[in-house]
Length: 198
View 1: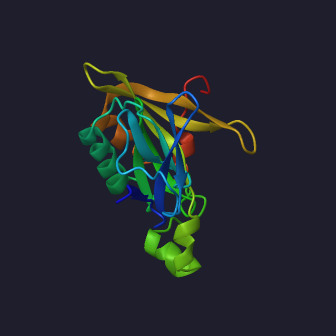
View 2: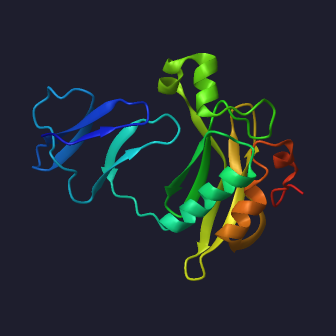
């Protein structure tokens, strides 16, 4: 049986191995199981990943993640309990934990924040296939031995541009996730002063 991956939109993906002229393999993503050379398992040193913004599926060389499951769960719990956003997930990449929320939740409370069920009720079941997610708050692991994190929030640099800047002091994830996560989905988010912008 070929290896498959189903993304959050419910679309099934398969992966082809195509031999190059040098005898190595390149891997391609497809939504058809009719192709030859579909892999039966993910090759050693590779991983299948779902990109957080649009649920695009890729196969790539393994990217090590410095954070752990417990730290990710701490951020998940803090955002769920203290913030005002209703539809979100935590994405771990390299030494960052990102908070991604759907386009039906606003960073600074500009509009009402909707749960997934409320978005479906308002826009229909098909909306899940087109939902986009964005990140405006992240936590960087800056001390691997002591497990200390630096919070960073988005700073908009133009109509489409943005960058992240540090806010507050370095601390344990349970402290910084609660202290800054509580502002997501509320107008107080933009009262958090990024360093260098005070």
